[in-house]
Image 1 (cartoon, rainbow, N blue to C red):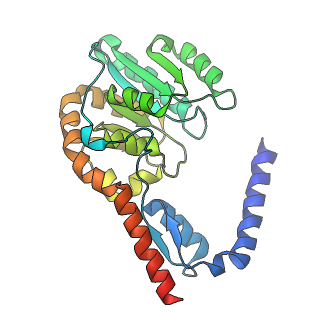
Image 2 (cartoon, rainbow, N blue to C red):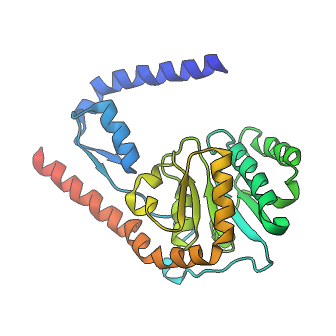
Image 3 (cartoon, rainbow, N blue to C red):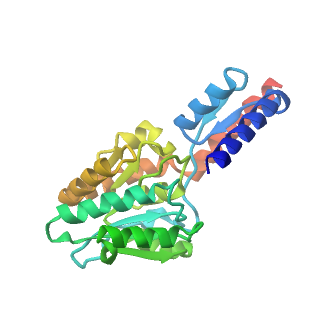
Length: 265
């Protein structure tokens, strides 16, 4: 494993050294999906290439008409946390998520919470997570849906009380955008590029935590405790977020930068 990681790092370093000389010097600009990514690019390339930052919008397979989005939950008395993404245990921090969730189950009165993991298996991640849930004693509160079509992902998100993602490192997961546009409170890892947008990190219904079980568990318990207030905040923020993550705005910003590059050539 260590050899594999070392080899990947060596290959990445080698590629960057070659690309910096052969490719990056020819670029007019580099597009970053988040302020965090922009900082990484600038630390790598310095001032050699201009960097501009603009996010992506939601998947059109999940959200086709955000104007019709409304709040709803399962209605069965359970508080439902949802994660959407491939079951890549390490990258997505799913082992951390299960540890945090097991602690939340113990702390929430009656243990009336559920965790729904939406996404395909990834290199044996499903079986590993099933074993961990059993070891933690929360397997009856964890549900795996497998991969779902876009409209079904939307239904699961719409029925959730909160979205949670504790990635150890993550660029710009569209599921975070989709959950926010559906008016859901969110608990997000500080290592997710999306939260480097001040417009996201400052939201009253978003909790940014380090990818650690204790911090995430405390946030989950708090979100359950003040559910109604956070849902209200989340719904009220949708209009501003819809503008931030609008594909029309994204396209407009790209075109503006393309024109600047063309005119400076």
